[in-house]
Length: 353
Ligand code: MRU
Image (cartoon, rainbow, N blue to C red):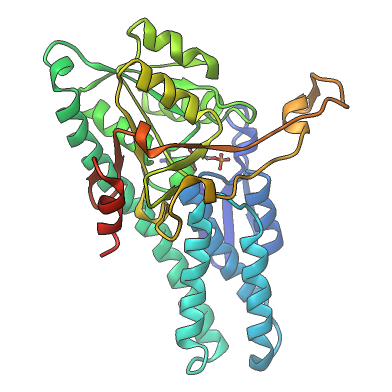
């Protein structure tokens, strides 16, 4: 099993994903600032894993506190603010810090600092474990939905699936969201081959998803991001499933840049396009995708390829890390509670009742 992150004896351990698949480098830290840096630099990444890492980062910060109880609230507020500032789009990060804040608010008055620290660590482990379980449930709902939607094709042959970015163990703690659906569908004999798009500029599809599929022995081929339309035109893709970083009340979905273009191509070719994500990725407070903050990353991510300069250093660049796929292009949003199809306004809201 891939060990993406763990927390033991006060130490946060993570697999530094920037070096995969060429090098498997595990890093250990007890310093919350280093953990924040790991989130910012995408050493740890993927919405649910960012959430779980944020929980552990808060635990590191709290453990570092040496002052008296009276000084703790101001320290804690600053800590939460610093963790929240690490990445803006994946709502799982804020979901996790809100959970840690709730533990603080409910117990600060009655608990000693030592007891509060222990409660916070327990909460962070719960965030992690919940995400692991969510993945299994998402996979089950996803496979059931696929069996319904692709019943015609499945009578004669297996399916070819497109996925974008990385949504596996490296992104989620458990078997993954979209990749979890694919893994279970493969186990059940529904999948012929996975197409993983490279996910420029940081190549999560080419480097990370391919690495996970290789690890599991699932047949796959990698493509450049701009190739999905021709593969669909040639009947080489039957459906697509990706993860999400934030889903608004109407089903609009922020995910890795390039997702929207795949979804448009899928619509044009009349192929189902699914989002697989835990309920923690749904931001029911936002009505529609235009409200989602979209992370813009530094220009050198594009001007250089893994440290090698490929463009003029002065080339002006627009480097959005995510785009927003309108809910109208999405066949279904598969969560751990159920697969929501049809009216997202009511279907997604019901998940919170
Ligand atoms: O910038 P990243 O690598 O954190 O972006 C990750 C994605 O866009 C994933 O598709 C998304 O977080 C879903 S992970 C299950």
